[in-house]
Structures are given as structure tokens and as C-alpha cells.
Image (cartoon, rainbow, N blue to C red; front, side, top):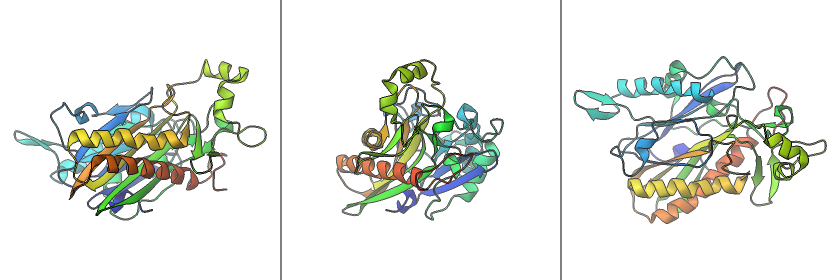
Length: 318
């Protein structure tokens, strides 16, 4: 398992404030990258995502931003646009270039300093930090303030982070993912069906699904916030796909979330995945989509297993 940068041409950069516990992650795309999206959660926070739909004009994207800070964090996209413009990246409109930078945010304002959020300077710094090296995981970038398992309050939750993974799909093809995990529910290991991170009870894990159907759970659900959670990420491949095909890959990639997060795609989550194609390998998009789901699930597992304890929240690896 490598990371998203195992796909040739892609760069990943993080920037974060470790005192305020927030940050952002940028994926810089090689020329002619075709983008798609699948947005399934009921509480999304996004920017420039409509243009990724197959019926719309723009086919190519220059960068993807994954950011903390809730809706405020989308300001970081301005710094990404500035970096792209300075480096000649963007969609040509008359005498100017407009960088195409779709973005999604997660809510990380409960820990750290809620008045500090990713901004244009942090987005620009993430671009400066971007490289083709294996991306750092855990409490960095968009995963800096990520938390999972919040049904019984933040005190009973666990620290999460950002993770990345890749899969060799044969025939020269590869697919990879990077995911920041800030879910309302629990993270499940698909191989064992056991919870590895999530809401804690007095003894072990509380199991969010069981809590939801209990008397206490029904009371909690009546005032649970729909702004506090989301899993945001991206998959990339070196298989040559058009806009319709890469959109289908994004949809199939979300199966990886459904295998590892319980519950998935709730009204309390803003689950969003971007998909990116840049390469010349010829392959059936169904193969790419099937393995994109595997890469996505592995990146989610790595996100929680690489997290470090902070703000009194325990982690899966400790």
C-alpha cells in the first residue's frame, strides 16, 4: 500500500496549526486531469463542485482542497487558486486563467481554537509543501482536528486523522485514495467487522448503531448537530477516463466508506469524495471503481490508526 502520490504527476501538501488543531490538505493535479464527484452525506460543505457534473462545461481540474474549519475553511481555496495562477494553471477565459479548485470541508471547531481556521495563507502554504513524496498521515492537514464517534458527546469520542493508500490493479493501472475521517459514527475493520475507533462506553465501545436505537440514543439524536461531521477525500488513477466514467468511479469509491463507517451517509455527515483521472492506461472503468473502493476503505483505516492522542482523546493505535 502506497499513497495517493503513487499515481504519477499528483502532489499532496499539508498545512496545519497544531495549537488551534486545524489544517488543510491540497492535491495538485497534473495537466489534463479529469475530475468527478460523489456527494452523499446530508450536511455537505463544498465549493466549485457543480462544475464537476458530467453535463457541465469544465472537464479538467487543477487542484482539490480538503480543509478543516467548517465553511470558514473554504477560504483556503483562495490561496490554492493564487498558487495555481502563479504557476500558469487554470481554465483559459479570454486574457486570463481561472484555476479550477473544487473543495470540501469538515467541522473541527470543537477541539483547539474555534476562532482559528484555514485561510488563504494556509492554503497557499499547503501548495508550497506539496510534493510527490509519500504523504504524511494522522494529525496533519485536514486530519489535524478530525474526531470520530460523537453520539455520546465529544468526551466519549476518539481522535482520527487523514490517511492514504493505493492499489495496483494490474495492466499498468493504479488507483489511490486520501481521506480525512471526521465521522459521526464508528470506524469498522471490514475483515473482522469489529469497531476500531468510535463512541466509547463505560466498558469498551458503545457501538453507535446500538446507541441510536436505545432510549438514550433517540433523545441524543433529537438534538444532534448536522454540522459536526463528515468524511472527505479523493481517489486518483492513471487510467484514462472521461468525465462520465470518473464520476462513476467516485460513486463506486464511496462503497469503501460504507464498508468502514457505521452509519454511513447520515444527515449528520457531509460525506464527499472527489475522483481524478490523469494517465494513458486503458482499462474498464468498472475495474477502477471496484478497486477505488478498496483504496478508499484502506485510507480510512489508516487515518484512524495513524492518529495521535490530543485534547484528551484516545486513538485506535494506543
